[in-house]
Amino acid sequence: MATINLGSIKFNWRGAYNNSTAYAVDDVVSSGGSSYICILASTGNAVTNTTYWNVMSQGGTDVGTTLTTQGDILYRDGSGLQRLAAGTNGQVLQTGGSGANPSWTAVSSDWVKLGSTTLGSDTAQIDFDNLFNYSTYKSYVIQFAGYSSVNGGWINGRPIDSAGNIINSNLYTILNRAVVNSGGSGDSSTSDWNGDRWYMVQCSNDATKPSTGQLYIQNPDSTSQWKAVTNLTNGWDGTTQIMVGAGGHWWGSTGTMRGFRIYTHGGNLKSGFRAELYGIK
Image (cartoon, rainbow, N blue to C red; front, side, top):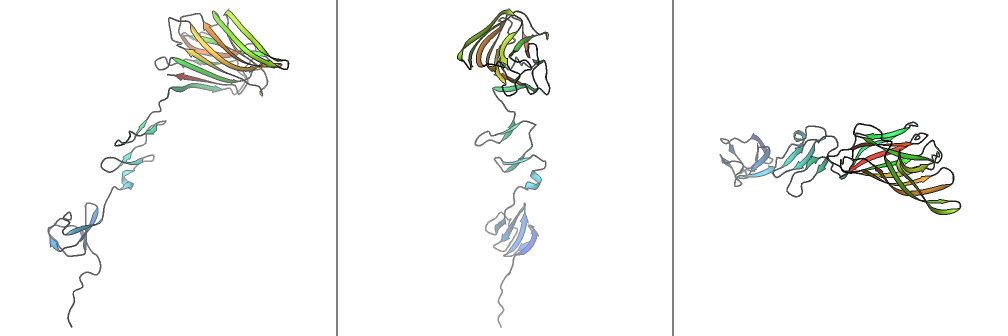
């Protein structure tokens, strides 16, 4: 009976490619992380020669060895997969657009919180001191909300000078308010010329009726201008009427203002009173 040569009936694994080895059809070798199958018997023809070899499986980046540390991110650059190590605390991932690699960058904002506090107990005052960053911000906003131990008392402000002194003289206030009570609505005003405080808003001792406000401070480091503060407020006098107000305050000095005090006259800011300082570019 005639003998019929069926050739290989399965792939024949030959290990790593060797230039001096004779290879037959269906021999399989490895080279450079990939595997190749012989399609034409030969000796000395590299696996890149497509006359004799076809790619059987293509090697690639080993993700398990590329990503080595918790927080790593896998991305592709111009040549293949790459590792982006974790950034520092608070950074965000930023794209450079098409054709560029991603990177970590610090958050940049034109409105940045510089300080905040929420009182855990009744306290006489809140000081935002030495928090102004003159090289970055020329404008600042203080937001506050809460109530006091004085029924119908005032939430007041005072500047803090460059030496840390609380200023209680040469202060000017004009505050115009729209008010409403059981008898109707109207207007009122509060003013003080060369006084000892800045009047900002009346407040109650009722936790259900908090006073709120925003203070705008411009150029506190100026040595050629009086310091100006503008405020918008909303309050309850504790008994008969509610009010919204807008006012202006000046410190009659060209000295540097390094901070600001919020306090009540004759009482305490109650627990839960909140204040925040923001710098604006």
